[in-house]
Length: 166
Image 1 (cartoon, rainbow, N blue to C red):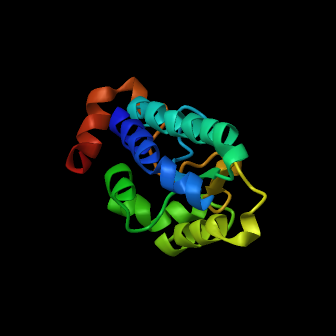
Image 2 (image 1 turned 90 degrees about the vertical axis):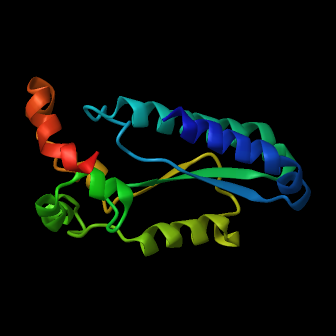
C-alpha cells in the first residue's frame, strides 16, 4: 500500500507551485485503523500513517506560504470498497451500531468534511486529522467486524471467512 503514500506525495509535489501561488489547501484521505493497530491491516496502516505524517509536514513547511494541509480520516462508510472488502454483508447491516451516532457514515458525510476544510470557516485550521466516524474511534469499534483474537489465532479460518472479499 505504499502506492497511497507515493500517490499523495507525487500529487502534492506536482501541484505545489500552483497551490503556493493561490494560497490553497490540501486535504488527504487517511483512516483510523492505524491508531490502535488493526490486525491484518499492517500494509494499510503503514500507508495511512505515512499520509498523516506527510500532511502534517506539509502544514508546517508550507504554512508560511499560505498553504494549509489537513486530513480526513473516515470510519466505516457505506458503499465504499473498504467496507465491501472488510465487512461481510451480514456485518454491514449492523456495523453502525458500534458508533455512538448509531449509523454508518455516508459518502456525503466525507464530502461535507471536505467542504468544511476547504471553506473560509476552516481558515485557521491546519495540520489536523478530522476523524469522521460517528464516534466509533472513541468506543473502540472499528466497525469492520473482524473477530478478535480469532482473526490472528487461526489465520486459515479467517482467510476463508474473507476470501470472497480479497
